Length: 458
Image (cartoon, rainbow, N blue to C red):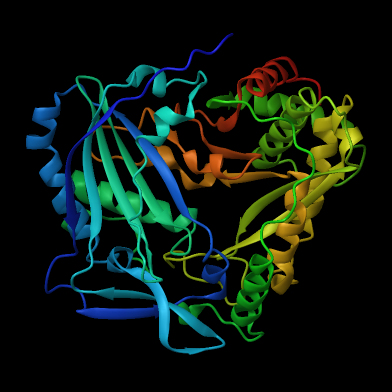
């Protein structure tokens, strides 16, 4: 199906600043970065868009709902007040403490209210759309020239008589996906039922002392990052020509399709140990589809011997002692997967991918080799690895501001790193997995064909 690009119109109605409730948070506060945080210091924000069906005019939304969104956000910041601050160089730095989160009483979160004339139904469907249409809904972190990093920005976009989109951007140095959703769900619950009645959501724990660093991974990781970044970006191997526009589309693995894939994989393993979770199946299937779609448009043929996959693994329960579930920050380690590229192209490529993913997961050992993670990630960039953002475990469709479940959740951040896909639980709540993909039109069409026609070709 051919794609027709369309212009995007967004009108900024108001831009305000939201602060924590005065007198209920410290006048100033500093929190050190952990070695998990410092790994994301030189990256950018995680961005999510939450679409809700709400047939209301822009004027009525601003008068009825916008004030309560502001007040509930302010109330939520009573516990999450560091998100209104920024990261700055430490006034008295040491090798294990060069940067810190800093909040003072005049810090705020920029909060924009906009009106969009884009097609709400199109944006919330699964068909491919121009990525530019989503970008206009993404809030932008403020720019600074003082060496500090603002952490949070929010934008609400109204689609008159159709719905709204709440866009949240939080710099990755502040938190991982688990903590990102902790904040959003807390804000949504505060707006829905009020802070007094918010239950079942733990208070955030910002204390970095719960993350021990006996091997000085903070200073080792930061030194390594500075050294590598000073040399500039790694050279890319000859990639396929990128076409404009970049499209984003959602592909759904239903519970029935996931079960069919699992059964096909298990039937092939012949006594081998196979890690066959839904996450593994979805990653393996998407990996093979992405490789095939890209190679079909690479006229130079396959030049690499190996294919690579990267994804993050939650470490809160893996550390000794375990970190509390309410810990707010980053607590991720990378998982590196490698498989033979030729074997991924053959029939049974999904099986090859699943075996490689399962082997990598079983080989994880807490923080072994942590000081070399950043170097290894950069070394793989020329090979265009597939990487994964998000996870079904974060339950993004459980966010409820009082208007019901989102009709669509997007993770447009994946566009910033070629080869990245997003994963989320399916919005229908029936156990499927949504896979978000950003590709040029020709590659997107090939990905769709592979995804639709190869379900049983494991």
